[in-house]
Amino acid sequence: MRMFVALLAGTLFGLGLAVSGMANPAKVIGFLDVAGDWDPTLAFVMGGALLVAIPAFHVIFKRPRPVLAKDFDLPGNKGVDTRLLGGSVLFGIGWGLSGFCPGPAVTALVPALAAGIVPVFVFVAAMLAGMAAYRWIS
Image (cartoon, rainbow, N blue to C red; front, side, top):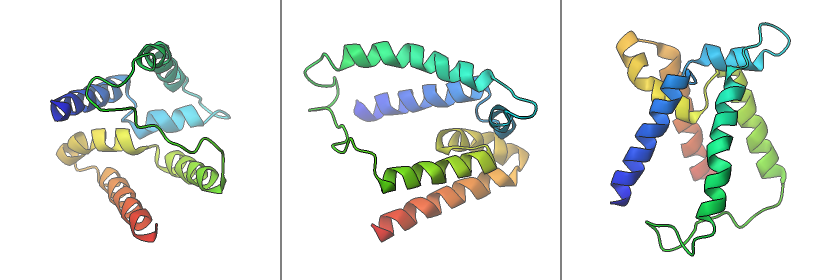
C-alpha cells in the first residue's frame, strides 16, 4: 500500500510540474532573471504550493503518527551549519545554471527522450553522479 501511495504522490507531483511548466528550464531561468525579462509564474506556483502545504502540515502534525508509517521521520538537526549552507549554495548554482532541480529534471526525462533533448540527460547523469559521490564520501 505504501508503494502505491508513493507512486500516486510522485505521479501527481510530476503531473503538477508538467502542467505548471516547471519542467521547462527556460521558465525557471526566466524566473531567476530578475534584472532582465522576468517571468513571475514560478512565484505563483510556489505560492499555490504553500497555500496547500501550510494548512496540511498543521493538520498532519496534530496526528499521533502518519497513516502509513509507525512514526514521523523528521530531521533531528535544526541548526544552520556549513554543510547546509554549502549544499544550498551548490543547489542554487546548479539550478540557476541549468534551470533544473531534481524533480523537474526527472519529470522532463520522458519528453526529452522522445525529442532527443540531450541536456536533460546530462543534468540527470550529473545529479546521479553527485548523489553517488556524496554517498561514497560520507
